[in-house]
Structures are given as structure tokens and as C-alpha cells.
Image (cartoon, rainbow, N blue to C red; front, side):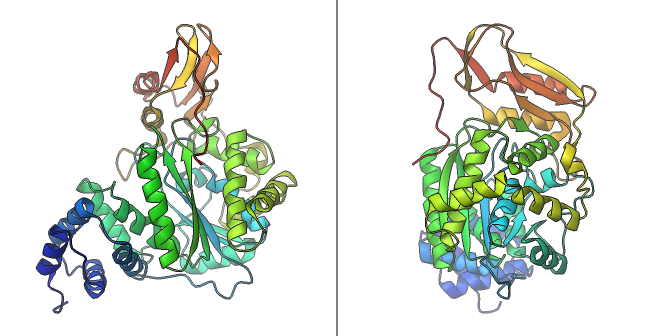
Amino acid sequence: MSRLDVRALLATKRDGGRIADADVEAFVAAYTAGEVPDYQASALLMAIFIHGMEDAELAVLTRAMLHSGDVFDFSELDGPKVDKHSTGGIGDKVSIPLAPAVAACGAFVPMISGRGLGHTGGTLDKLEAIPGFRTGLEPAEFRRVLVKTGLALGGQTADLVPADRKLYALRDVTGLIESIPLITSSILSKKLAEGIDALVLDVKFGSGAFLTDPARGAELARTMVRIAGECGVRATAFQTNMARPLGREIGNASEINESLACLRGEGPADLRELVCLQGGELLRLVGLADDRAEGEAKVAASLDDGRAFERFVQLTAEQGGDAACLEGGLDLTGKTETLCADRAGYLAWCDLRAMGLAVGELGGGRKQLGDEIDPGVGLTILADEGCQLGAGDPILRVHHRAGRGLDAARAKLQASFELCDEPIEPTPLLLD
């Protein structure tokens, strides 16, 4: 620490310069150890937010964060290790059916996921809607589950990328979340700590995404693919639409039920399309398929013949969950209210963020870190984007718990859609 001149480092980035590799590494180590105060770390993050980072500089930052704690090594496993990451959105449950489907095709999937953030749901919260399902796995148990089932779905432990945990918390309270270099280093440091060979990135755009502008999303996608390559991991990024909800269910238990339908070869077409596309690309990246089309066909077959579903049942049992309840699906609240069109028109989604916040009002998300989540509340989409509705036709079904937060949710949901006088063209699921 005595060799690191923090003020000189801050001045370099303040003026738009590149920080020396050794100084980046020393800064991450010192901040993780508590030897650099938050006010100096905040100053550096702000300078990065304003001036950005060169690719080589960003790769050094990512590797330094990656090695700030434990790193998994699964090199003894007889098969490639892969994962998928999404920047998050409304109804985005792709990871849940994708992981067992890809594992059924011969890859290992050590997936470290997160909790709900702002208006978006979290994979861990959805999994914990299954009674008894444990996501807080220590490294030895994570490895045991991975070896036995071909996949493991857990959360970030205290010793896995601690630099990111501290830096992310600081970014959150200083308004520095939406920085492409800082998003890149945060996502990739956690994913690469899994010891994977290949990664697929799902970068959302539209009103329900964190980066709503497709051009900004494209920049993030290209940056993450380049930096993953610099760190020795093959990666592909897709830009997918979050100007409309994915699937028809929004809420933790209901999204598990929709994921189970997908795992049985059923469920909504858009969810299946992304599971097959992204899973197929993972198989291609690690040589388990000659091209993406073959990979997609293999993933689709694992969904249709029951192998993917059986993998998820096995995983649930290994992680302490009640596997028997998967056959009949998880219970919802039982109390519902239907929102209907107040006039004739063509349905257009206009503010998906409001839809996610409405689920939070019902108790399906967190306003503060310690809030408990009600897994049974949520929304069911009853009408398709662009369809012609008459007055009184149903649009959304709200699953609520004895009216908790219903008025606030109803007000937000009214802002999530509009009825247009002229026909509209549904927005595409995927950008080229």
C-alpha cells in the first residue's frame, strides 16, 4: 500500500489518462482490504464514469476484481463449463430452463446468480419460491451439486469477488450504476470467477431494461465480448427486447411455473426461443455443436424429451427443495383482479419499468435490502402486443395477497400500456 499513490492515480483518471496496470491491481487489492477510504474510491469511480477506460485497462481491472477473492477451478470435470448472464428485465426467467437444458446436452453449468434489483426480478428469488430450495451454497457444496447434476445455481459468497461487492454497493449509493466499463467489470469478474470456458450475454433494451437505448446496449455487448476474450473466455452477446414482457408470467412462483412448462417442451414461444438460441450458442462455443442451428436443435430436444426437466428435478432435490411440488406447480395467492381495456384499441406496451414496480408494490420485490418477498404475487399477461381489443377485454391478471399494495400496483399498471387507435407493429424479440 505504501507504494500506491492514490492521489496521483485519481489525478491521472481525472484528466482522462490511463492508469498503470500495477496501480489498478494495487488499488483493487487495497480497497478490498479496507486500506483505501470510500471517498477516494468514489472519486475514481466517478472519473471512470466520465472518461471511460481503454480495453487493456478495463481487462486489468476485471482480472484484479476477479482475483480479489476465491476463484473456482473445475478443470478436473470431464466436460466444458459454461454460463449465461442477462442484464435483467420483466419476466426474464431464461436462466432457469436454460441451465438444466444445456447440462442435459453435456456441458457443466456453474451459475452464480443475483437477487431482484429495482424493477427487475432475480433468479435467486425465483428459485427460493420453491419450498426448501437453498441458493446460499458454500463452495464445497456448490461443487458437489455441480458434479452430481451437471449444474449448480447459487449466489455470490462472501469470498467470491469481494471487490465487486464493495464497489457495486458504492456505485449504487453514488449514482454510478450505468457506466459501461463498471458494468462490464462487475458482471465479468463474477462470471469468470466460476471457472467457465464460454459465456453468453443477454443484453436487454427497451423500457424494462436498465440500459433502455439499443445503441448503448450494443456498446455494452461489444465491450463485454471483447473483455471476456481478453480474459481467455469465449463469449457471444445477444440484444433482446425488454420493451415487452418475456413470456406471460411476472412474479417469482408464477415464473417458476412458466419455466417448468418450458422444461416440459411447453410454455410461451418467446421464452423457448431465447432458451434454445442462447443455449445452442453455448454448445457451439465449446464444440458440443458444429453450429448454432445444431446447438438449438439439441437444446430443443432436451426440452421436448424430458431430459431438461429431469435435470431440474434432480437439482432441486440436491439443493434442498421440494422436488415433488414441481409436478403440480407452485401455489400462487389465489386472490386475483383483472385489468381490462376501458375502450377499444390496439394494445401497446409503453412502460415496462412501471410493470416491474407494480409487482414490487404487491410484495413481489424489495424496496429495501431486508424486505421479505411474497413469492405468490405477480401478474399474468392476458393479451398480446399489437392485438385489437374491445372495451372490457382483459389485459392483465393481478395476483395479490388480500389487497396488499393493490391500489398502488393498479396505478402503476395503468401507465405500463396504452390503447392505440391505429394498428401497431409488434416489436422484434431480437436485434440482428
